[in-house]
Amino acid sequence: MGVSSPRRRIGQLAAVAAMAAAFSAATAWLYESPYLLALLALPLPFLLGLFFSDRRHALLLGLGGALIGPATEAVCVAGGLWTYTETGGIPLIPPWHPPGWACFPLAITLVVTALRPSAFSHNISARTVVLLLLGLAFETAVFVILGTRTFSALIFALAASVFLLAIWRNQAVWLTFLSGLLVGPLTEALPIRLGAWSYARDEFLGMPYYMPLAYGLYAVLLGFAAHGLAQALRRAPK
Image (cartoon, rainbow, N blue to C red; front, side, top):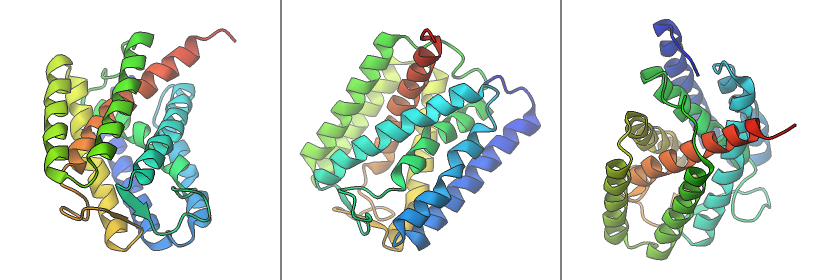
């Protein structure tokens, strides 16, 4: 990203906070009009992309989130972990998911690079991308299998978090994990409270105890995989 100005870093953090709050509020009050919400959410990833010096990379990063995020959510909904009140006739998930999930890797990247500008400057190998995607599939499968057994899911989330952060001793990974742990649940809290969707287990801010850790893991796996895919697509022959 190459951000050098402290003022711009503060601007990044403020933009992410403002857009997360706006998306959370819009979802809370407009979830019964899912297509209108999707239309209003559509500009958000492009606005976040304006903070990237490499706009093409930002576009590819958002595309990765728009594809991977809804796919994993659909599996979780099918597995009974949570249910959306209104999907607009679409199976499992509402139409505002692609633009909403496109924002996630962009927002996490802006938060992390505001704190550590060189966080995503290194190349991520194809092998690492494959491992990250396999880890994402494994995480999703385990949470679906464990279902409503909160204690077992929490133990798994703790063990997986310790394992990931121990084997990947990188400050950017830690910052990404913490960003996901905070941004995800805080953005979800208001829509859940007002009925946009509901978890099978309502234990902490309307969600099960393991969800903050699950969001931290998801941020690392999705975030770095999306960066690796964006880098690979940029290197592909035109």
